Image 1: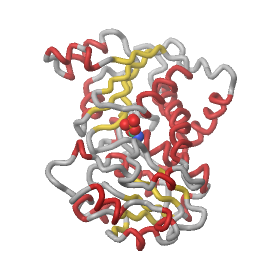
Image 2 (image 1 turned 135 degrees about the horizontal axis):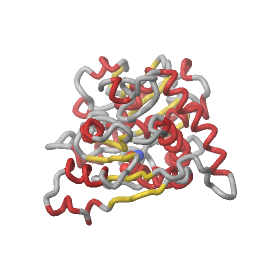
Image 3 (image 1 turned 60 degrees about the horizontal axis):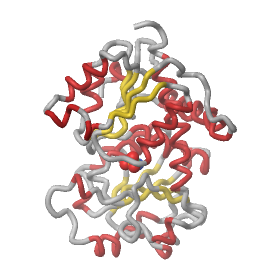
Image 4 (image 1 turned 90 degrees about the horizontal axis):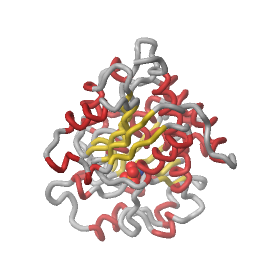
Length: 321
Ligand code: CP
């Protein structure tokens, strides 16, 4: 990912497409800015005028509950005008290309696009084709990246564990098809986490995953030993071609996070999941609802983190186009 596409000439965030190409001070600035925005959610009037007069279009070509809704809330809490484009009801169903749809929306003087797409590289492609003053935020592209999810996960980890430089983190499950895992690994490495472990069957782990700066094991008990943070991943069946695993029951038997397996982790370990969660497939229901679970706090934190990213990216186009 080219650094210059994401950052402007002064090193400020212009587009947010992936964690790669950014740097630790910028990630820390996102976390610190998000920290300040958590206050807005606690106010009786949950609104600040920061993006008043700006127009943001949410383009979700793939289903979403958490990302779409928390972007929508974040934009409204910043007082932006928000367009939630219903792709299934748009002219794309009549054969209009992504680029033509984009150019028509750009002609309506949209300031920022938030994009989710099943194709890896879609947000990057859009960012290459928008005019100078317009920003693009990647809300998940194929199996490539989900940078705002990774940042809300980092925000949640920092809330509970404070210092990244002492942490052992395990990422468990279908890493092969996970844009979230890829973005998390880059963010954890960039923020100084010394030990990131990937626990997965070989069929659901990218080859040479160690090149990303992680330790790989296919043994759940071994991988969970002493970890401070456990991040569970869903089986992303929609991105699988052919049979990558025998059955969901068998997956749960070897890789499901159960109460008994959780005993291998540190006693104060936190359990995370980006959602959507499949109870009884990657995680035992009682574990998902246990006091170790911070899964719903991740969702709440997503609003403040997305407010931070939106406001920082909008800074670069605060002038006239
Ligand atoms: N974590 C995540 O991207 O969830 P949604 O698909 O519901 O947005």
